[in-house]
Image 1 (cartoon, one colour):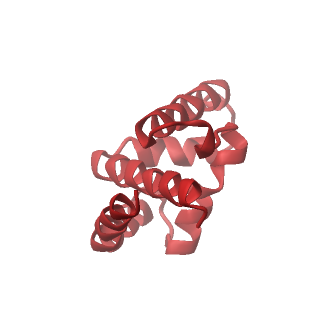
Image 2 (cartoon, helix red, strand yellow; image 1 turned 120 degrees about the vertical axis):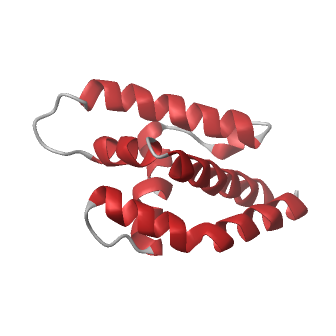
Length: 115
């Protein structure tokens, strides 16, 4: 599992600048590493998805996406922008979707390794 975490971290590090640039363009503001973490990493509690409840990262990532979609569908007609709208816009970009999936995969490994 540690090797998989290392591979995931290499991917994230190698693609971080591109991901943050795309996220900044999509959201119309500067997205730093810390703000990206808040946008994506802070949603586990909101979506009620705990990496430790899953036996593999794919199931965890899929449930996170399902939970996001459920919240987005409830909030999509809201007259002001909510975080689900921002996440939805980010997930609509193919590159960012893959990056976010790897970001969540890293979260899964870190939680299971107690990091």
